Length: 120
Image 1 (cartoon, rainbow, N blue to C red):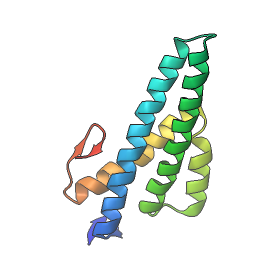
Image 2: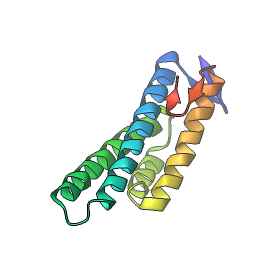
Image 3: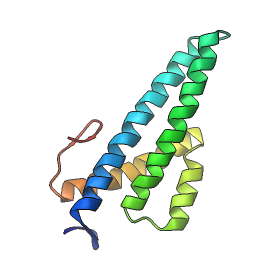
Image 4: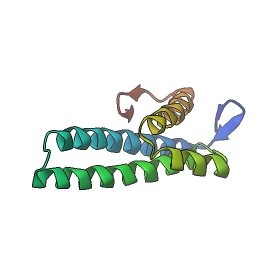
């Protein structure tokens, strides 16, 4: 049993937090790369492909973001609000950083090392 700010997490919950955080960060990275590649392909068929990839990675990011918030025992109302806000470009990034920060603190309190893309 691990404790962070009066919340208790089991080993399985810590593993779920670590996995979901890693997936969120990986899909976010792919999403950013897709947007950058899309910008360089104006008016090209490849632009449509990268636009589709960016949409797919955006949806996957939100799915794992919701799973991460559930694993962090976030209230259902906040899960819905943050999931909706995550589709707004700059606001979504800020919301994601806040939730990612909490996930990192929970994992560190459990003694897990955190790297650039989540738990090592």
